[in-house]
Each structure stands twice: as structure tokens, then as C-alpha cells.
Length: 208
Image 1 (cartoon, rainbow, N blue to C red):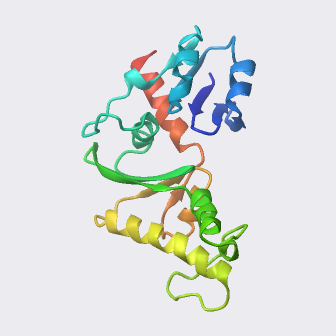
Image 2: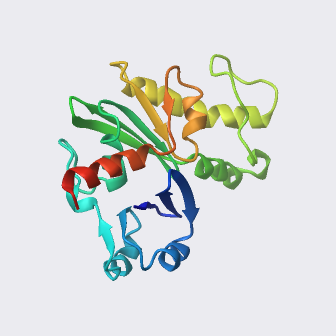
């Protein structure tokens, strides 16, 4: 039973306990005749998805107390995966959401790390870096531009997470940069399949 998370850039497929990533066009080619369960945040694909007779859109079956109109289905599904906690999905965008007493308590959306890195090169070519350095958040960098830029990206994200998590809830991370962020947070749990855990719960509960 393939579970598919259709994002703005790629589609992520959970199948046989593995996650594969495909271009949107590849998804439609390879799974056209299979029954799959999906969530989708790529609005331009909605008409095409409605043409796929065997594909089941899980969004109508997802209900989160306290959520607002227009809240991404990926964020809502993620909150269902492990119960109360702070949920961080670090992909094209970084979402930080609080789920407490089985209710959405608010959240924040930031540009993804790769977008932030790209924005520095727009300011000046001298600020362009290929990868982030591992930085010590307890002290300001003094040695080079890469460390300074890395600190400028990571430190505000971690500070915001800490501010949101005043109740010391469990912190769950997923997404392409989720493991990186989790490494800066004591006790944070990284699981690349976290979103699919939430999707699987929706499938079982709604029996769709």
C-alpha cells in the first residue's frame, strides 16, 4: 500500500518500509495503475490528481482540532503521528507546530535551509556557501564567512523552537534537514518516516 506525500518540488513515496523520491512526472508514470493513498500541497496538480481513478486523497479524512482554514494537509497529518509535541518538518519550508492536549496550538513557517543559503548569494557572491558548517550555538563565530552564515541560519531557527516549546514537550523532526536540526536540540527525535506514520493512522481510522 504505497503512501505518497506530494510536495511542491518532489513526491515522496513510502513503500515496503522505504522512502523513494520522484519527480512529479515520474510519480504519475510509475504509479498510474496502482492504488495509492496520498496527500498533496502542489495546487497545480489537483486537476491531474482527480483524473487518477485508483488514487485516494486523504485530505478529506484529516481533522485536527484547532487547525485553521488553509493549513497544509502535510502539517495536519504530521501532528497525528506521535501525539502531543513540537513537530518540525524541515524541507523546502520549515514548519514548526505545537500539538498539545490533542489540539493544534499554533505554529510558524520559515524558509527552508536551502532557500536561506541561496538568499545569501543574492546579497553578495562573497556570502555564497555550498554547505553549512557545524557551529557552536553558545559562541559567535570568528574564523570565517561559512561559519558566520551557518550560525546566522541555524541559531534563529533553534531559538524559535525553544521559545515555542516552553512546556518542554517532546520534539519530533522530519524532512530533508530534519536530522540536522534535531542534532542541535537535546532529546529531539528524528524520524524520516514520521509523516507517513500519520498518514497510515488516517488510512486505518477512516478505512478509506
